[in-house]
Length: 315
Image (cartoon, rainbow, N blue to C red; front, side):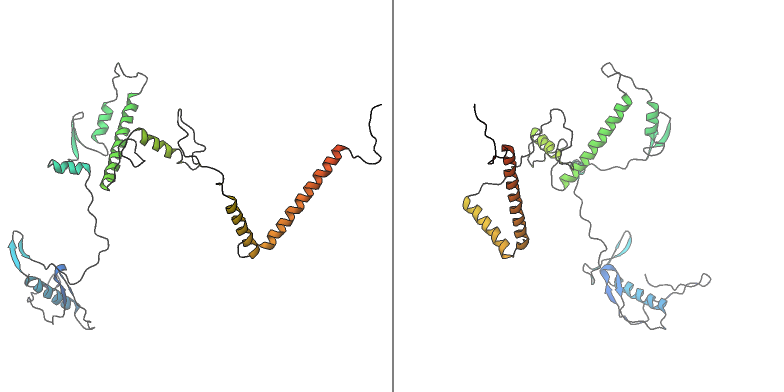
């Protein structure tokens, strides 16, 4: 780059300018990012196009003053390693994604990923069709396989098309499980393709299945109270909680009662002593009334023995 042209109308030819600027160099350069900053104020009568052209020319002159070398693409300039300004990023630097099992397998065997073509030749219809999507080769294969032969060992009452769809769904579920396993292993954990071992142990089989059933039984909102029990399902896997109060000695119980009474009488705690006294008096009156009513009932059952009562005897 030796000079810059000024934008003119299509009828007028471009006027070439020299590679020097017509103003003073007061720019702050950051050559690592190929940028220049001008913090000086601009007057109202300044020609902004000419001023910008001179600023760009000064930046280009600074870039071409750096060490240069020629390559296949042309003249190259070595930019400095350190910058003047640290430009902020709108988003953090992306972290390097951990490699999956398949990627590690390809690296060990020096395999390279090849891009498959979107069109595939359909031998049934004799034409090129897309591999997936609308009017793909899978549709023609499904239309061609409209009848299936039932073997001697197969169940004649079972629909082979439903069985094929179930196998496809099973393959998709296994592939999804493999993807989850790859993500867990990339994060540093371990996950088996069969029943997960939830007891944080390396054993597999009976213990892992027992722990899975134990957690599934209490995973509902009702804590498994209204869930249906499967045949031969063990229902004694959950730990039993002990009810009741632990036994304490007489001295400890006495101290607890004295502390409670002290809090009530002092008025420091949340208990109102006047209200507590009223509750105590009402309980005493209620107990007295109950005891009187019981005594009256006993007398009425005995049949009131007074002075005028008749005594029964033998004749």
